[in-house]
Amino acid sequence: MRSIVLAGPGRIEIRERPAPAPGPGELLLAPVAVGLCRTDLELADGSMVYLRQGLATFPLTPGHEWVARVVGQGEGVLGFAPGDLVVGECSIGCSHCRLCLAGSYHQCPDRAETGILRQAGAMSGLLAFPARAAHRVPADVAVEDAVFAEPAAVALRAVRRADWRPGRSVLVVGAGTIGWLAAAIALDLHGADVAILDADPGRVGRAEAMGARRARADERFDIVIEASGHPAALQLALASLAPGGRLVVVGLFGQAQLPVDVDRIVVSDHTLTGSLGSPGVWPALLALLGRGRLKPSALVSGRYALAEAPAAYAALAANAAGTGKLLIFPQDDDRA
Image (cartoon, rainbow, N blue to C red):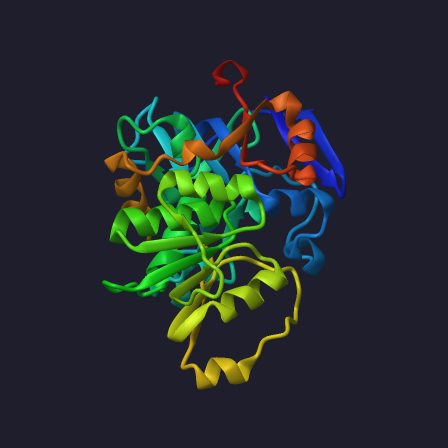
């Protein structure tokens, strides 16, 4: 089989490798579509924090946003059949430590993270994957919607941590994939008043087409979700909070320190909340996709075969105006 291998900073290779055999408790999957995100770019150029800290090492096979078909299974696997369309979680805990037992498996010190840490990703012809972290896709959900399951689960958790209540207004800062999904989920679940703020007119336009509105100057919001990961946007997010408001930060900034006016947070009774990953939300997310109103495939702006992965990474790095989600199709004949 062929796989994408990140062999070192800036070294994106296509290698022929032996097919994996599923071990006990594992599924053998044929990835159908894989999404690229900024984390994949950071892995490719070597700047990702796990690489800098020595937690993750080259070489690695990326791909943590994916949808795949079941083609086999190891001993002890129940609930799956060949041909099932499945998606899988990024964070995979040990299942028995204190954090895992409390449901915080994304914080497990011995966790794997698909395509990043201790678990091969889906940019490959075949993938052995723990069945306990896989989920069947509801019937009638299209491949190009299902491939968004992982970022949509991240967005759903951020929306949940916003503690929305009737009548509260919402601003999403950053209209990339996570921001668009957070806005769409807030609209779908709550019918909330959701505004969007982004410097890219194309991204704002996609959010407006989905039902969000453009934020107005000097507007204040009860809830702000920061999904851009840009330091200046964090300042805008804080400035946009109404008294008593809650800021949920889901974007990662790649910096150890950022200037924050703590006095303003205190005197305005603000709540600052982080949101990492997607623990515990996958059944709810898949039910949401299964209802058919959330259609993230509208974000797809580029499709690539596995052999075209270097070009896909280059397009992701260029980030031209209007760039949405870029997909790689490991099974070439499955390209849309």
